[in-house]
Image (cartoon, rainbow, N blue to C red; front, side):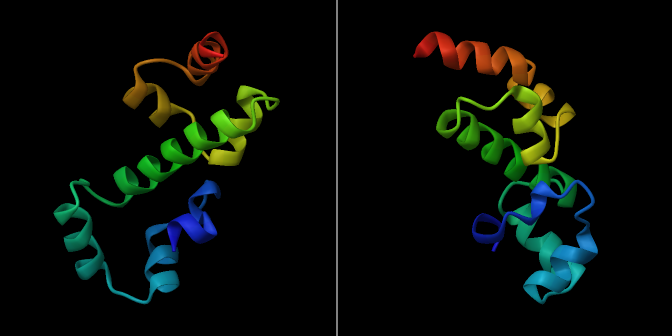
Amino acid sequence: FMKGHTPFTNPQYSLQNVLTDIGTNEHRFNKVLRYNGFSGFRDYINFNRLQYFKEQAALRKELTVKELMFMSGFYRYFASIEKMSPSEYMERLQQEG
């Protein structure tokens, strides 16, 4: 569902939204998240945003970092995981050609 519909690109996407979208309850959803190595909903959503950002950055090099951040629905999480800002990430991608 997440890959096909990318609801995580909406910064307001909530736990309640995902539960409704996939038709489950919070307990079951959290159990699946923990089983897959996520600490919770935020961790899971931000992981999806990060992957989407990186995918779009590689596919759509004409976009600015701000445009990519907007499309992905995040900023802060990217820097905490990648240990660099989205701008630095884009510079590295440009250098790699």
